[in-house]
Length: 179
Length: 357
Image (tube, rainbow over all chains, first blue to last red; front, side, top):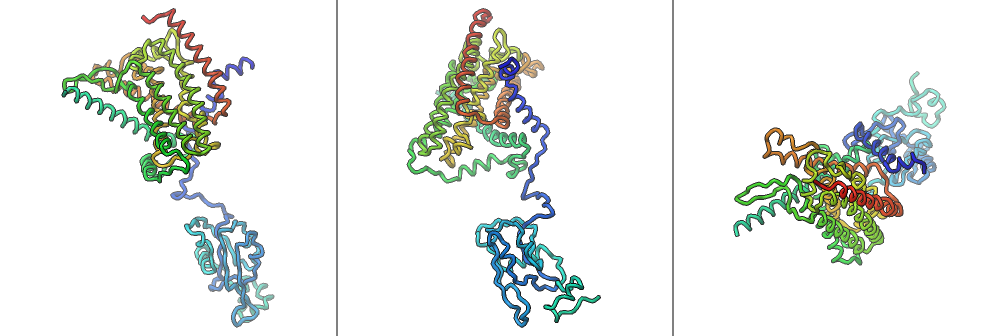
């Protein structure tokens, strides 16, 4: 051990440097804490929160019961029971739609998989509950979530763009988009 | 008969006052530690209970009071109950000989009273050391009686650590005892009157600066504080010797730890930093002609010195990681002990060559 190192040891040089650092933090006290329930931090734009089912602007459900979300889900959160729309053999809808949010990992793959954009992720995250069964959501709850989080709804798919209406053979009985 | 009962009443009042102040300090410390640690780590500390969290100690106390009192299966119930008491009583009893203020006497109902020390016995510091050693039994017994491997390991570590470092505390203060020629804390403090250059840290002919450093480090180790918190090492032993304790028994250990911190801080202030003496000759109030009120300034200085040490405890906790067990033992026996012994030799020679006038 050379003299300098020995001097540093007996004067507790390293410890004093560390204590200077902590004292510097005490003197310019700038806490990074966010007092969470009282103040909330801004969420990022692409925040992936609670899942929700959406409606068109006339109040009909977007979901066509295709089961692609169920297939895309890596943790088997979603269960869809698909059925024909009564009286319209070319159309299907989800008769029942369940989500077990205890298993959801919020990857957003169901949202990517949906061909009609019927699923969306809200910015809600405060879903702590006392009973796990309250996280087992049915279709009504998911639709209510969508109504709550997305007050501005899309038009029906066939009304969004003339090309969609032109090639759409399934919805012949619906009015064409006025040009 | 009346004089005796009056003396008993005065003594009880003194004890109640000192206990009240110590308990209040412990309450303040539990909050202050969390706040200071938070501030040093860019956090806020407790903020919920009361404005800026200042009522947190009361909330903690109520919580501990109403918590379920669990005795683990297979625990020795008698020892399990005895251990927290054995830890707390010695920590509080040491305050009996601490001089908080000057030794001036006040006339009260015809008897003269020394209000700022409960009992100025002539073996004061020895008494404190003796009771500090008994406090270690509380920790060891608590660890053993819990019937838990973590508690037992914590208790055993504590035994080894407290024995090693108590030796250093005893040897570190020996230099001061040689210079003062007394074991009474009152006499030691009075011998340091007249400015900070008369304090035993700086006093000629033998400045006790090395002994002071040894004492502070050993005091941190003796109170089981970071960086010497091996008996309760959270990351290794869950909570060490009080893993199995809950409710009021845990609160007793908690109070004991903080009361021990206050006690070693008081002893450090009294032995090395002049106790209640101001760092200038006399007192400001005394120079202004208010000799009757000078005791207030003296008590303020004692408080400042004690709180400086308590802040140092928090500061070290915010800065340093825990030592490894072998490092702890090596540091205690191979570094601290030789320094303390060397200090005694040097001080003895100096005291022989330049005897007190």
